[in-house]
Image 1 (cartoon, rainbow, N blue to C red):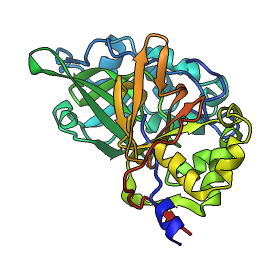
Image 2: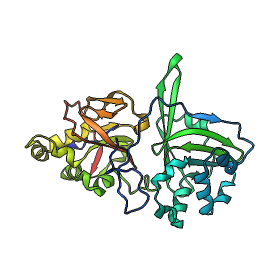
Image 3: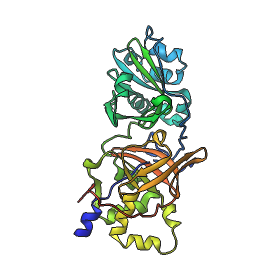
Image 4: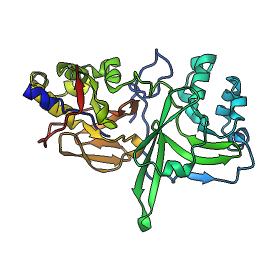
Length: 341
């Protein structure tokens, strides 16, 4: 029991192009993981425009070239909804819809579900978003919530540059309209990302590439992560990452609950760090040590591992997929972070 009480302190961590992982599956038969999201920290800060305030949301979308989302709103019979008062719209750029295949576009129910997930029936003012300390969840017209995160980087003259994300999608521009606010984003949002059943354990369980790390949780008797220890970021090694370990190492890990506990804590950090919030530097993880994260033009690495899949949104935080197992480091005293059944 003493060993299990130590292992119960396990939790989950922070944070390319690989087709095996895509964070934005729009229907059941799609792979759960996979497209590469570039990490661009040199891009311009979010632009706020106020010169469109005399036009309504429909006019603002048209004037700013956001024609795909506007056409799809019309196709899904949501034009009247866009005319409503005090509306917030998360408007993907035209290019973002390339990730949504024709099967979804031609399914009236699915299309309406996705588009309603991009609408909030009250106005989320940019000043309110700028005051977010960690993250904020907001209910959508569709019924599920979206998660807003803000990442601040110190700039010249002690000013701070802000990067805002919604379910990991970067807000590129903010435009005020006469009946609400439009936030232009770089990705189409997935209504299933923050469904209550889309937990970290469910994400690991539902993809065969994570069967080894999922088995480690199972071996500890862990079926659900405690709500007390949200939010967090988890670096999930693939099965291929474990298979690259020297002969005998994986077997030794699986034979020791204590070593499994250390490994999971080493791969987990407190806070939600989507790809657009990652910066080079040390990352404190639940084992009590710091891991070295490097963001470069060639990709993102954490210690010896490369991040090969970004931004798998789930209810407890976010998962990034890595191609190597990070070695266990010396641990500090741990705090309970999972619930055992």
